[in-house]
Structure formats: structure tokens, C-alpha cells
View 1 (cartoon, rainbow, N blue to C red):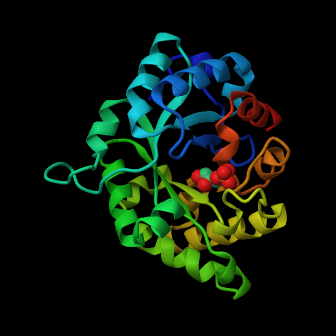
View 2 (view 1 turned 60 degrees about the horizontal axis):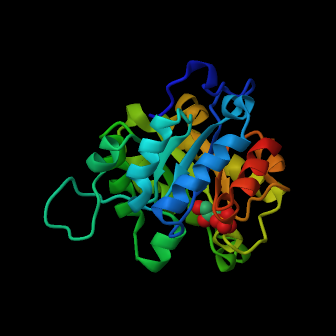
Amino acid sequence: MNRKYDDLLPSPDPVSHRLRLISANWKMNLNHLEAIALVQKLYHLLRPEDFRYAEISIHPPFTSLRSLQLSFEADRMPFTLGAQNVSDQASGAFTGEVSAQMLAKLGVGYVIVGHSERRRLFGETSEEVARKAIAVQGTGMHPIVCIGESNDERRAGQTLEVLTHQLDPILSTYPAKDLDGVVIAYEPIWAIGTGESAEPEVVEETGMAIRHLLTERVGAETASRIRLQYGGSVNPGNAHEFMSLGDIDGLLVGGASLDADTFAMLVKSC
Ligand code: 13P
């Protein structure tokens, strides 16, 4: 973890007792020089109370991880480093892949697994996503497991079935003692990158349904500790509303995290 300053540690939500987590998923954007410039500006724009409100994780492409690790350390920026993907294998002849060990060594704290773009464009299955999450957990990092339904699935009333199916391999294979360290990001596919976020009522209802499913599968105590993020066209105008929902503990932000002014405004609005 890259948080070294106790006075800037986030405090838990007084009601849920869960730590809030606001994550910037940069996807395949920004080279390492642009990445450094963005975090420096963002740090300058944020206030100490923003870091006390929530942990803020930055998920750049792999090529910027080392640069951001050094920047965070050198300038004492209390961001947590994050990655967007990982191999489910530990090492070996897997051309183009990056292992959880390698990410952990860079000080990465959170790794996004199973983003809908990876499921859709790269054919990742929920079983593979579960293996990746377990690889992440095995090195002491936390997986951010993305789940979400398509427009057609929602219209057909299949949302809960789809989410259950996506979570099932994780819930049945992940080490039970560490399940409370998993972050689940609910990202309805139809809300990603469209500028049309889900209605807060939909997120509230789905968040409750996910929490209910977790309670049934892993027990009330563990379920109450698992953090849920919402993602999909989050912006400075709607972030606060999502954060005020009882079951939502954080945000996974794409487009609005690529500009320091916009992302700072978003964090401050929460
Ligand atoms: P947008 O915020 O650009 O809709 O992206 C959401 C997302 O996919 C974050 O992982």
C-alpha cells in the first residue's frame, strides 16, 4: 500500500463501518508522462479531508505503474496504486501476461478483474475471473470484481440471474476467510461510457439484491463487510447520490477520471 501518513487514512463510514473506495480506471489511456502529470495535478487539487473520506485508487495501464509508484513515494501522495487486469498464472510461458506477484512487488493494492470490456472483448469467463481474483488475494492485494448485466438482460428481467452467475465461481472457490477483502463493482454494461448512468433507484435496488445474495451465500457477517462499488458514467454531478446509497461504498470511474479537474471535482462532491 502506498499510504504512509496516518493522518490521511480514510475513516470508515459511520453507519456501514466499511471503508469507502473511489477508483479511477484509466483503461487504455495516458502514457507514463501524462500519468505522472495527472496524479500530480490531482493531488494538488484534493484536500486532506478528501483522503480521509475515501481511499482513492488509481488504475493506470501497466506501463505507468512503476512511474506512479515512484511519484506517489517521492511526493508523498496518499493514493493507492491499482491495476486493471492480471494473469491467473504465477509465472512461465504466457507471452504478454503480467502476474499478481509482479503487481504486488510494485506496491499495487487493488486489481480490477472481470471488467465487462475484458469479458466481452477478450472472452474472459467468470471461472477465469475467479482464478484471477484468487491470484490477487494470494499476494495480499484486493481484487475489484466487476459484474454487470447488458441492456437486453435487464429488459428481459434477468439481471439478478446474470449477476449471480458472474459471482458464483468466486463465492464457491475464493478462500472464505478472505472474502471480506473482495470489492465488488456493479457496472451495468449499458451505463459504461454512454453518459447515461443507472438511476440511483436501480443502483440501490441492485446493490441491496447483491448484498442479499452475499448474505445467503457467505453469511451476514462477511456479507456486511464486503464493499460494493457502482460504476457506469459516474460524473461530478451524480457521484454524491450514488455514494449516499446505503449499500454502495465506492465508485469505479472511467472517463471522468481522465481529467484531473473533473476527477477532483467528483471526489470533492462526495
Ligand atoms: P465510464 O465511467 O467511462 O462510464 O466507465 C465506467 C467503467 O467502465 C469503469 O470501470
